Image 1 (cartoon, rainbow, N blue to C red):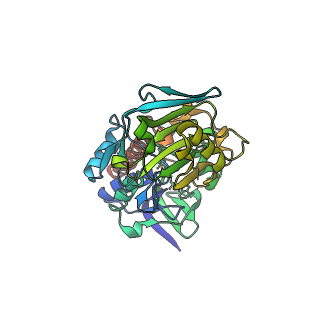
Image 2 (cartoon, protein in one colour):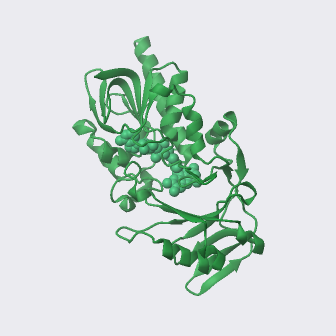
Image 3 (spheres, rainbow, N blue to C red):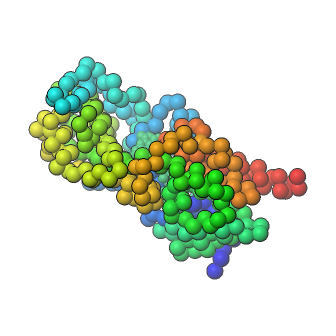
Length: 356
Ligand SMILES: Cc1cc2nc3c(=O)[nH]c(=O)nc-3n(C[C@H](O)[C@H](O)[C@H](O)COP(=O)(O)OP(=O)(O)OC[C@H]3O[C@@H](n4cnc5c(N)ncnc54)[C@H](O)[C@@H]3O)c2cc1C
């Protein structure tokens, strides 16, 4: 059976949910189709033990008006990234201590994790309008509408918002030949922000590095972690540091042993004994990254002019962070792209109504 709605939003990351919440306020009939069994996309803060740990995005910044407004409107509790102390620098010659912390900039974090941004948006959308575990398989144009086929549902709609990284959309959704070739090529080569990253979080009993005046920040020429940051909660509880490993194409996955050896060399023996080591390899997440994601390097495609206008006769709108001209890659970019897509839809509908 095919259902009809005004707008199908594909993806329940921050871009998709921000789009959906604004369209609900505008009185439109919408559905959000999400492939995973959770909302948030690259905002992912699972509960482990009694705390939440950010395995995707960690920070937002003062110069990002949309995220700051959203966080303050929904009364999400923030705290400042820990900056105090010296940083460390690992090279083949050993570990050097550098006065002050030149790696971390002032940034804000959320006590309940960055995923709570998505969860707060979810509350503003009717529950029956969000379908989890329902990956979209195809989009095809019909005369005055688009047909959307998902794993467990079929839709006929005026507008589709693709709130999925363009290269991931191309990999997971059959868009047919209807999409102009230039746009298909652009989408195929647009990198997925952090899609090739492995984020590794080491959770400790206490933030032991702070005892010796260290910030928990480190930079390494050797790897596997290239940069390391304090990721503890407010007041150092829970205590954690995290690092990014950015494997090149064809490289072996990072092993826990390599990471623990590196942390021990940088921070001393205590660092080799975390309560747990959490590893999020985003390359292996099919609803974030297409195969070979680490080979996509054309970052100048971000916010490309072709993403700033709807395709398929004004019916297909791009809304992932990669399509934003503002802060592309960041959560702020996802919200900005969503706002643009909402504007396109509302403007298109008022033009049709006024007959111009
Ligand atoms: C390790 C890491 C660290 C990061 N650090 C930061 C940071 O500190 N600060 C910051 O601002 N940003 C950071 N980011 C980026 C931030 O997470 C993204 O900018 C943001 O999540 C993008 O939102 P989005 O809605 O555009 O895409 P996503 O969050 O990727 O959401 C896309 C959604 O679409 C769904 N989907 C995909 N295919 C389909 C399909 N076929 N059918 C239905 N649903 C589908 C996905 O499951 C997902 O839920 C980080 C990202 C990662 C991975």
